[in-house]
Image (cartoon, rainbow, N blue to C red; front, top):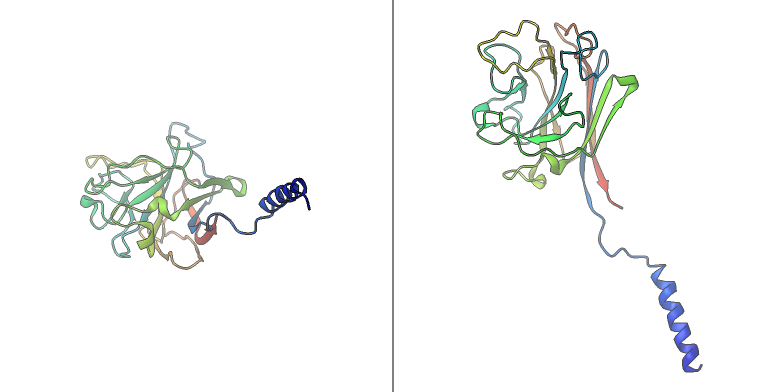
Length: 238
């Protein structure tokens, strides 16, 4: 074989093999995602259809401190105060609730926020967009997908999170003033009195789900939680 033929063959092999490489140049990236689903008796609406001046708020409160006894709880009874919708065992230091997702007229993209420690659950970090947000089943269901790293904190990184405490909370009024009684306020949270939350294991792919039956349901069907689910899933970029 002459030199010209040898060069052509070499060039053909390089082009052919470069297009048929079997091995990736970097390993697959894997991680955990959390799919959070909230269904109401009516529809997920940003404002009350009967009274558009009344806003609807849909929150998902998340605690990553690996302690299932610290909250988060819905703000249910006076004296009110704080942020008016969620509290915890040690709200003074923002312990028991570390992150939240808000879907409302002020936040229709369903951004994720982290509570600033020591702020009485009043100060938040810059928002992050979720992986995905969908309104499903004719408008009755809100589904938000997040990456586990989005609810990590400087003190508890994603690799150290083994469980999450999660509460779904709806309301039509943020009860932030301790000197008010909020007679028209409606709210709902998990459990018969809206004061429960679910603890999930983030190390195992699993679906947690349940019907939500209240002792006294909100009269506004758009705020009445009837079903919830949390799915832990492992994802890969390849």
